[in-house]
Image 1 (spheres, helix red, strand yellow):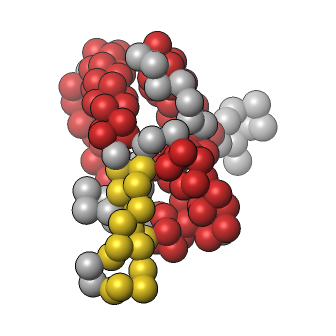
Image 2 (cartoon, rainbow, N blue to C red):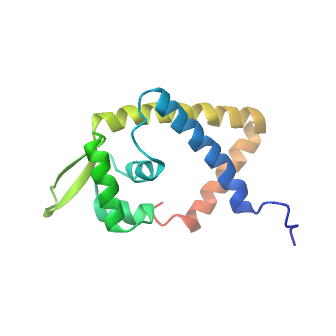
Length: 146
């Protein structure tokens, strides 16, 4: 049994993620993208390149459709997303990233790449590769959208 003072594996995975997320949000704010919340970002990052239905965004973000709709409304008002008719179903609408969202994504992607380089410098190339391989294997049993 693990001593109570040692964090469990979930916490050990969460801590680096939270540090990464904090760096991304700091860089986004510095670049002028300071008008959305982490909850909005979790919805926005699930939007596919051709758009995604609100119900799918809600399911993937593990929130209610009403909450997803509220967050998308806010993102739309801030200019990050647009809603367009779904070409495969006239009754449905797709949420698409607007130019502002793609510009923010470029900033975020650059920070993520920098943090991953730092992690690799700290862990070494072999351990970083093993970490990615292990997490990819875990994704097979933890990510229903993989």
